[in-house]
Length: 413
Image (tube, rainbow, N blue to C red):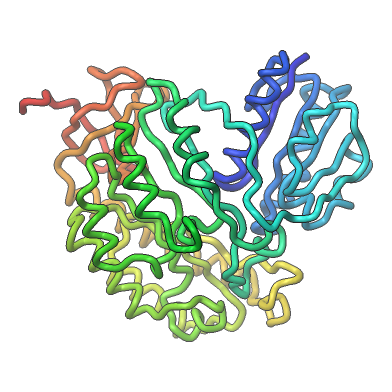
């Protein structure tokens, strides 16, 4: 019997799907993480935006096209948010918690478990890739006014350090990079204190590249960055969620920093990592965002000179504080998103032109090109002289697509 586990949304969801894949494989099932013909499909859903939730519903129909007789099982944030939307379309509707109950393919109905108050240990994930996602934290205490995730994932809770290190020690030798992930990775704690630096220091000895997923600027001070710069295997790519470059909008968003503080954090990072990749998320069209506030965001993005932007038109989410505010017309959101998309292209080009070389993990082949990422997260395209799984020293030639053309250099060059 073949089971396909399909993932929408974040890296945390992907990790949790990989846990299910490993568990099914250990029980003798044929497993896949692709949308292809299978006997049963598990859809791990996302609810961060209305569009993500729509795609989660749409995935059921897409699965049925491959096998109309297949059983469908739904779990994750969209089913936690609104389980009724999946009733009658799936065998079982689960929420965020208790996903391991999906291993019993004979169960059915709707089972929405209470959200846990502490981190729930589970079996480790299937890591068939060169880059391994390791979940170390769940939940969020921030309650940004636009975000529904704290209501769906619960309060922040951290995984035990020993359990993380055990999983990493079991990774295959061909896993070359570890990506630490969590709903709010910056809130990872050890014995009640911020523990992210201690975790990174412990992981540095495994000899694999270490990368962080999305972070908040609040935990970054000079001591933190200085000690990061002393790690041998840390990848200097910081994805810091900005959301807006207007202080008045940040206040309405319930974000706990000012643009001045955010800029100082970026300057501090570049003091120790001059060529660090600093990427960010930006929400355009937040309720009440004036043209002046949007221009402040645009100007601030230029001032920081991010290496890349993830741009999201504001998505109205029932149950959040912002849902009670008047939404802006979709045409305004679309226009502002397009303006930032153009700016994003210019910033990416500027960042690439600052880099002459980089060490690239070759991950796959796309058409005629071999592709992979530098430590500071430039996507590089090679035509030859490399193999999937290698980490190569590369010369950055010129901007190309969303990254750069590159060629392999000899290590003694």
